[in-house]
Length: 154
Image 1 (tube, rainbow, N blue to C red):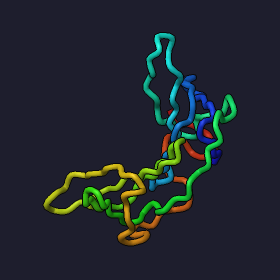
Image 2 (cartoon, one colour):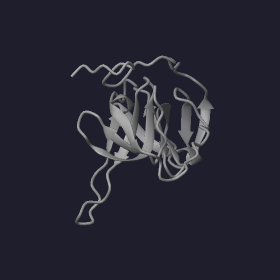
Image 3 (cartoon, rainbow, N blue to C red):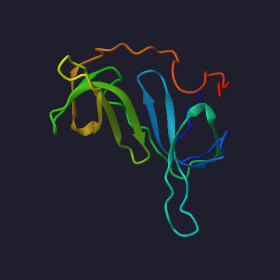
Image 4 (cartoon, rainbow, N blue to C red):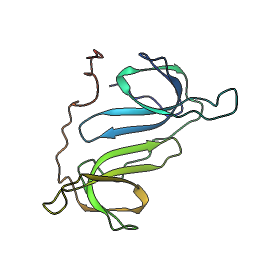
């Protein structure tokens, strides 16, 4: 897997969409995506950015700022508790932002009483570990639109 540096200019090889990599997202099933933010348009409006699978991206310009990837305080598959809201769930997504923030997507376990899947994002600063690795994460690639060799099933 190619790991791009945040703030590098990246281009989607399928659509031509390009912009600055402002975040890196990884899910519990092995999917890795980068948030690509295009520059403001000629009218000074900021267009919407997109999360795009790493396999579809190529770097077209060097990073504009030196971003140091922070150390993850938790792992995907950990059971975490948000101290601010009281929400508790399993970490299924980890997002690193260009400004150094880390956010985790937590999924609440489904019960007979509440069968709706719920997941919410929280800052790593408000989370605490309840129990490590209650869900085992496979170290091999399993997710997204394409296999790691770069072939696409469109």
